[in-house]
Length: 456
Image (cartoon, rainbow, N blue to C red):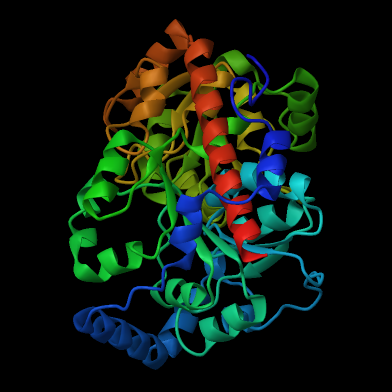
């Protein structure tokens, strides 16, 4: 595979463009006075704000769930203790990535921005504990915070304190009051990896969402279909492969051995091990029944989408008569090395763990989630198995020639077939995705730097 960025603009070129005057088209875009929302949209926005304030106790109850439990002060827009100090004159880029998967998608952009300007105030907000943990582990000098409750006065306090010059939203995180407040402060708003789920596209056709989307200054979409859907809503999007694909690469054997040793998994035999990655809790029953059918000759590495679901999944396995071992970052929670099912309750290790398995089931495809990333498993040399729900990963599966497909009832038989046949990935197709994703990240970085130039 060629080095990332070959055939596309380099970071040096981006740095040069940062110092050049912005093109006339972009300057005009920034100088336009903000559009005034229609009366009906303003009424809906006011109602949204009033309901959000009145339902604050319910908000806080929802946010107290373990997966979403972040510091209350940050949820109310307060500056966290130890937050990095913003140097006078330095620009501020606010990036929002709700979950750990979203954080992984914005890492390439944040790395490019930090490499260009060590003084840039990079703020990364999240909604989940796993996303926060991953963000805090990055050595990029980030100001990591919880996204505040999207209502007055909490978002207002948050935006007034930060005064961001640019706001980058991953996926389609359209928070009405946040968007309006940052635009009122003159920020440029960018959507990265925008995706309109086919079943939800009708919802975005309303005037309320059209008005919100009109606040977006630049957008990249994951597919031509998404770009067309956004175009019908008035947003011109450029199409690039998902930014998370920039980091696709096979893991080195020493890395794999070190992680397996740290997790007490060195005794696994790759030829008889399968992995269910980023598994949602509603898929667990089908996966565990498949393991029962496969028998003791196969071992299952099960990595939940959300680590806090590990205990519940382990209980389900035990009720089916399967021997279970639970593994966390701190060490073995329960069970022994001879277990049939190893539940790995960690964040950020899935890509390496794929190298320990011969077959991988892509999580989110046995339920209506649309599928997680199958390319990481393929690059690790796994035969890739997917369920019937793959509407989020069409492009990736095309690069893999579809993988092995089945429903919940046929999972065990399909897995056994995958063990026998093995996986064969077109690295040329994967490389094409990697380079396209890199071009997308560089395009977004260029837009961020251009907006910072205009704001200076």
